Structure formats: C-alpha cells, structure tokens
Amino acid sequence: MSEGIHGGQTAGAKVLALHHVSINVRDIGRALRFYVDVLGLTQRTDRPDDLGIEGAWLDVGDRQLHLIEQPDVPAALGQHFALLVDQLDRTVSALRSQGLTVSDPVQIGRGRQSFLSDPDGNVVELHQASRS
Image 1 (cartoon, helix red, strand yellow):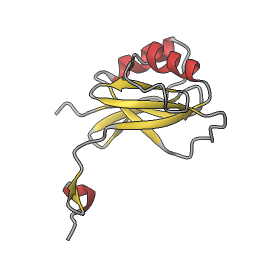
Image 2 (cartoon, one colour):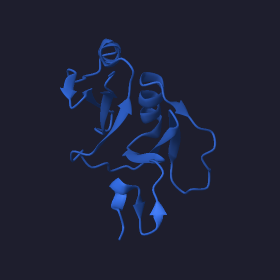
Image 3 (cartoon, helix red, strand yellow):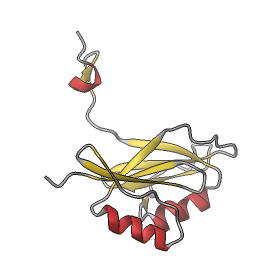
C-alpha cells in the first residue's frame, strides 16, 4: 500500500523535495525587476533558449522559481508560494519603504507570515520559521 506524499513515497517512487514553482507573468522584464531587484532572487543562466516561450529561471536558495510570460494571466485564486525569510519584520519594513503593500506579520502555527503581490497579482507569502 502506498504511503502517499506524507509518508514520502507513492507507487514505489520517493518524493525528495520541491524542485521549482512556475508562475505566469504578463511582462518578463517587469517580473524580473520585481523578483531580482526588489526581492533579491538571482537569475539563472542555464535556461534553454529553445523552449518556445519567453521566461526566466530564478534561484531561491537551493530551489527555483520559473517565470513564464503569458499575455493573459488570470487573477489569483488563493494559490501562492512562500519565501522563507530570516527576519520578517525587517523584510516587511524594507519592502514597504519601496512603496509595496505588504500585510502585517501574523503568527501562524509556530511561524509568522506576511503577504504581498507581484506586479501580475501572483501572491507571495513571506514566511519566518519558528526559532525554537
């Protein structure tokens, strides 16, 4: 019997970790300015040029965020991804000083979180893990 995702195995295969998250953006240049210049992610140089779509791959620690340019990006429907930060209050303050709207930090379980949206309305959670 398969243990499912929580047990680490499904149908004989073992899920090791999340590799990347892919989101749609309307304008790749604008998205890069937000994710690289504002949030401080690093653009990768190993994305193949022959994929047939405009986009970019970014490093987020040892994981990746893939940006895919699509002219019609639907409104966020509750989905989001979370970026782990070391000092949530400082991060929120720095982003607000750049004119961005960021929710107030709240306790959630043992961690804390705030939310903001990228220029295309994709929701980004900023998450600070418990320091216990």
